[in-house]
Length: 435
Ligand SMILES: *Cc1c(COP(=O)(O)O)cnc(C)c1O
Image (cartoon, rainbow, N blue to C red; front, side, top):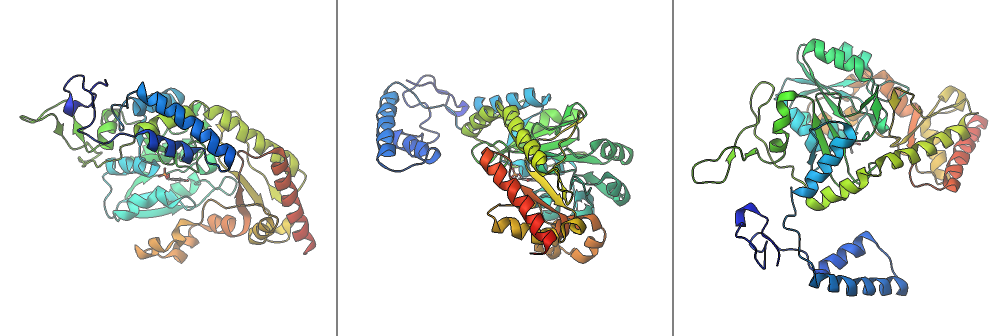
């Protein structure tokens, strides 16, 4: 006997607690899920799977399904874990970081003509929403050392129409937020931190993602930790908005009030200037469980990544054509999501395009994250002129086309790290010799 757990069908204890709501997962489904998460082949694998199946069938006789699969205790558990980790009380688990950004953008009541300053180098998701509603994107040039938004260029590009600034902590390296927060305060601009890579990064004693007015972290499968492939945590520092984050996630449902003869009310979410209508970015209990488990080991994961970055730096330190990953300091603690490797083209005897090719030839995957955003066709299709924007972002043009690439840092053996370091040094050597 399970217990009824869904408010719509709270009829007391029942044999089929959830039947009127939806199908649960059975033994067969569970076995497929196990086989998906733990893949293999061959007789030993098949034998182990058969043994697990026998045990799961037995377990099935003594267990009941969860009462809820969406937005319940496991999602809350993930939010509590994120709150404790970040030192906030506003963590809201949403479908992905992009959805988290949307909550912030909607709070800002973005309209055509409003300006949003984004870095020239980031993932397109950072700016998908403002682009989709016809707000004007203004591209800030990047700091050549970190590839992050350059606060000095942000200052130059603020106009009376600027409504938001979106610093992106590329590769988990914290943006210099103090000058950006100061500019924002002075001009009454909202700051949204794109902390997709930066869960656990620190800036001057505070966790990244707790400094701007809003922030969102990503738990997509390629980030440092994941919630079964998709997921995001959104946070806010707007005192009056705290209580609306959860409603902004789920269609504005409002249980503090009921309409006549119905269970709840739905109300608009207060924005900065006017209310907005919420849509649905809900997450599942399985995702919540997956996120809690990985948050618990996030610090150990960052430490392992850091050790790999330190090792690569030690191996590459003697080569003056290379500019190595900045390891941070007492005030700046990155998450080492990626290893940012740059070359000095004058000393290397060629630019990064040649260097990337040489690394590829040696089997070392390297991918610069990301290309200049204004080069994407969607930006042109929305009426922007890439070449005109490029003139306002000379550092971006220089570092992307001539200087930087990214290397992976996680789950590599000592042998693989050495292979990478050897390949990097050999590539520079070949370039310098012109072979
Ligand atoms: C991955 C990523 C995002 C988007 O995250 P989702 O969770 O996939 O929406 C946004 N910004 C940057 C810099 C990213 O790398």
